[in-house]
Image (cartoon, rainbow, N blue to C red; front, side, top):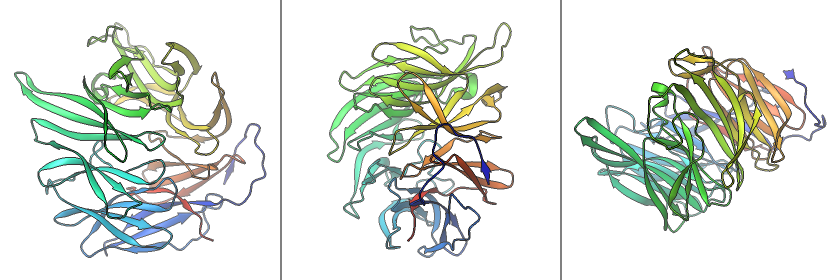
Length: 437
């Protein structure tokens, strides 16, 4: 157990109302739900056994934001099946069944992986295959068993389109979808993306717009007027280029917000700059916080420059907030503070910018500057899987090392830091749940 300095935080705190949980899977068609007390991780808490249907394995799980349910993908030889586990009653209910579209591989990949809870825990949006096409579906948790296809887009390995990333608005009334489209041309396969936005639960289209390149990290502004995203995400692997754009929902137009690498006219070029927008989050309807890194590569390669900055999309004003790259932003659901990983950039490796030891920080933001109120050091910031407990007290951080996953917890109320080491080499799903009486 480690105690770190905190800034202006009371050291007295009530007993927590939430506990951290993670899932493991066995060969006997059973899932174990393990609980960890963030104040005393070494305390022994008997795991909860969840019996699965025969010949079914757990592929992936997602905890609801209110800590009351877990959505699970189970896989048999022929189907992917969506189940919902109720933590209060221990009921495991089947919600839907979908064919395995590629028997030699797994449908879930880094972009199409999708069990996306709405912020209010009423819906789960996901992508799956119905036998002829990959669609996006919506599970209405309030009406168990009601799974509705949002859109059907014919998918072919070389032509057509299929859905990728999904993004909920903060009020759970809108859903944005990234559609990938690839076509054969003379020089090979040309791919582009389109953004679709619809209302929930009636599926009325709001906006649809195509854009060149691959896009990722969609986020709705708090007033639902804009969708921010990054472009050329996949190409980061080649020459480290990524900028932030804004989609105006009402106008159906795209505005480039940052100019980290290519010229302001948005033309593509192999210029002399490595640059990437690493992570961003909306503070209010006109304030976007962003972590970036840039470095010259010619004629002489320079060391990267890390920066966290504030952008005002409506006025174009920008200001520097810090000398680290702030990544993995998450916002406290109760009090609004930000948690993020502050990663110093130490060099450039084959996959992009490399970072060394850094900090997990909790900070307030007054519209002009970040003020750190608590932090914990981390020797390796390869992963940025931060989660706030739904009562707003704890931030969890998971990291993978050679010996397995480590879950760390930072208590906002006291600044206390605790750790829980496991031998797990994979994470089927983890999150915060209501503490048992």
